[in-house]
Length: 183
Image (cartoon, rainbow, N blue to C red):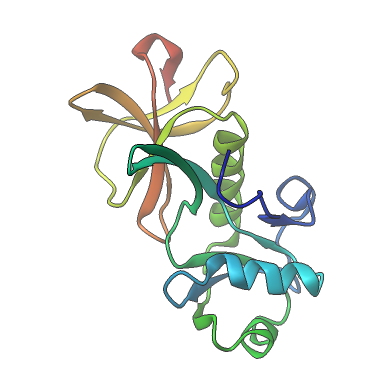
């Protein structure tokens, strides 16, 4: 059990399945001050502003005790969906460092949906901070059927990397080669 109870990390709860970017409503990447992602998410939730903060459960041992924490997948980043990004800065100026514009709305929307699907599957994953060149694949069976990513090799074996290219970061899960097909 985490030290703190799980908080809302997506508002509204169907944001990624129902909302698509258009001329008015778009994704904005909010670069927060260090360790202020959850605080900003709380402010946005209390003010009914649409956002997505992907969180992953991390287990650590401290003084012989097992401690679980919910950590942001992308440190210092939160994804805001709306028409007035400056409202985020005005709402919590001590949380926001800057707001980054997103050129390719469709690509970011697709990548966020994929990350959301991976997190919902509750499979063990590793946060990847730099992208590596590799083979583009799609999972062809199982719970994660249809997800696309890049194969990377680690000492422990093959992993599927799902990345948010805009941030040059992503997550990976361990997979077997028979589970994927080349795109």
